[in-house]
Length: 119
Image 1 (cartoon, rainbow, N blue to C red):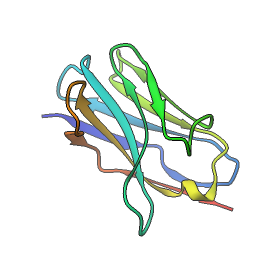
Image 2: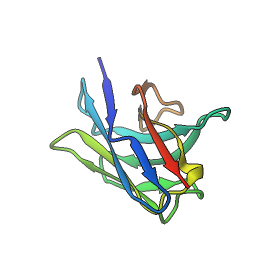
Image 3: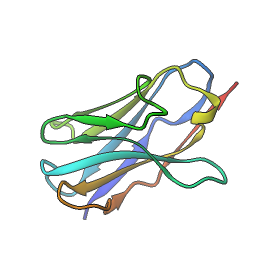
Image 4: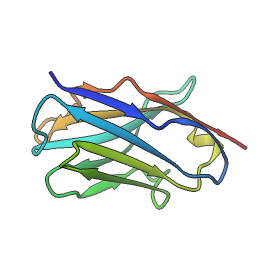
């Protein structure tokens, strides 16, 4: 049973930084893509970025490119989302998700962690 547990959310001011963690367990994730998504109140869930567990390549939504960085530690089975220069529009519940490389949809989701950026 795959489990994803996010942590690290909180209340920060605009311009601050925050690092979210996603602890993954339940299987070997070498062939998985780990994604970060967010959902703001009244809005649909949106893609933030993703990283390949096997080679560490990553991609990001335009809205966070240059400010957010995703990394992973295979030994710790942990993925991080480093968020810098936070803006009020980054306020959302952030979710970690996982899917096999060849699948289109993310199969596994964490419970989410709230990030609130005050302006």
